[in-house]
Length: 76
Image 1 (cartoon, rainbow, N blue to C red):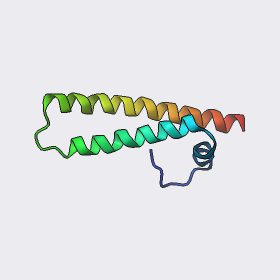
Image 2 (tube, rainbow, N blue to C red):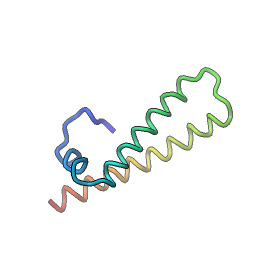
Image 3 (cartoon, rainbow, N blue to C red):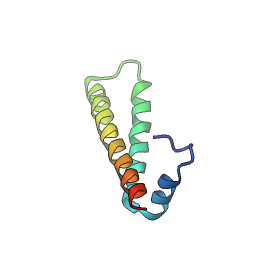
Image 4 (cartoon, rainbow, N blue to C red):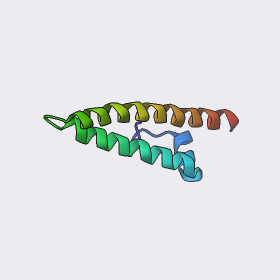
């Protein structure tokens, strides 16, 4: 999720919705961990499994974030 590009809906939700804020923070934490895992030269089986699992969780979370943004923009 690109946090650098201005988006008034995202910015408003970040200010006003703690659930949305938590989801965005979790998404960013997943991204940080995935970056760490990707930098490993020889990841263990557990680390490979963690990477695969985190990618799926991150994608699901991204879908939820965009659904919240869509619902907010439609209702306002």
